[in-house]
Amino acid sequence: MAFCFECCLAPIRSSARPAIRRSLSTMRMSAEGTKKLVFLGSPTFAADSLKKLNSASKAMGYELSLVVTQPPQPAGRKRTMTPTPVHAVAEELDIDVQTPAKASDPDFIEFLEKLEPDLCVTAAYGNFLPSKFLRIPRHGTINIHPSLLPLFRGAAPVPRALEAGVETTGVTIVFTVLEMDAGPIISQREVTLKGDEKSHELLDSLFDIGTDEVLNVIPSIFDATVEPVEQDHSKATHADKMRKEEGVTAFTENAVRIHNKIRAFAGWPGVWAEFISETAKGVREELRIKLITSRVHEAEGGPALGVHEINLGACKDALRVVCDDGSVLDILELQPQGKKPMPAKQFKGSLQGKTFSRKRVPH
Image 1 (cartoon, rainbow, N blue to C red):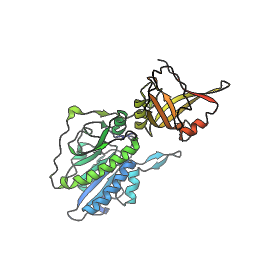
Image 2: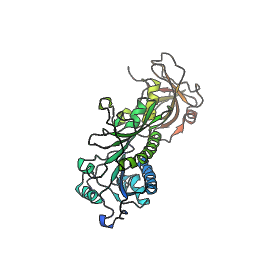
Image 3: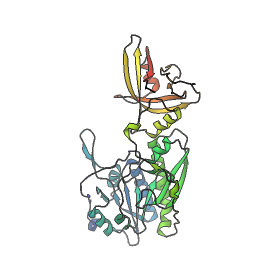
Image 4: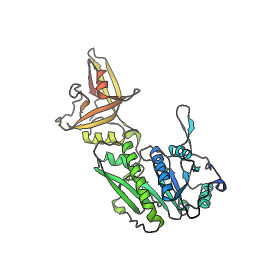
């Protein structure tokens, strides 16, 4: 049961033992009575949460005693072992770090037991937390989840919400239990969407809001005035991890559906489509293009099954594509395979003297 959050964080497997940067005896000791927090997270948006939590904790009289994150992994062409963004920020802040391959690792569990944390806070950590972990923090473990639970439990709540075309989403602070994202709700904040947000942008925003909510609820957790509410499990929906093969379109779907998919799958896996350009002399070239930014054109194109050629002059700043059902999608930004992202207007300049059409698919 690992967490993905739109593949900004992929499950990481490693056989390495936990890296304990300092033994417990050499860690800075908390002042007597100071509440000790442990933060668990891995990707960039969690690193931003760590910064905010660390700064605010000092002002509130808490101590961020330990950061737990995924182990370093090979990255780049040279496959250099690279720490997670959370790991890098923890080192900048001079906070002790552990990187167990699994949260059930005996050495890690023993270390945490000796630390005696008051509260653990998770933000896209990426590892399942077993019962022997959850028993350790005096006041429990809380998690920042970027959806309005019980909706969109699971690995990809933000892209699945965008893909579904929801108009309202939000962030939930829950107590962590063994079942994924099923714990009692401590706090929720709703966010109204404009309709053009992309996954990575919305993730950043929701985790920023979620960190503020964590800081708001910590005092009530420590003084035992918090009143968590059980989720209505009958209303739970699930946000499965995205698959690479989902990131394709042949414009057989409605323009709104494709637009939402482009927003949802921004970054990885992206949404790709196949096109054909042809010169006046009949020289054809097949192009695979990633669709980065889009908008739904208000006008409907009418029945369009079998209409594939794209009128390059129909819209100054976009490739205007008529979908099979007659709905119209404007592609504003795109990336031909092997090239850099570019505005559609720039791409159209490379099509001078050519016809351009979306690839036909059998029906």
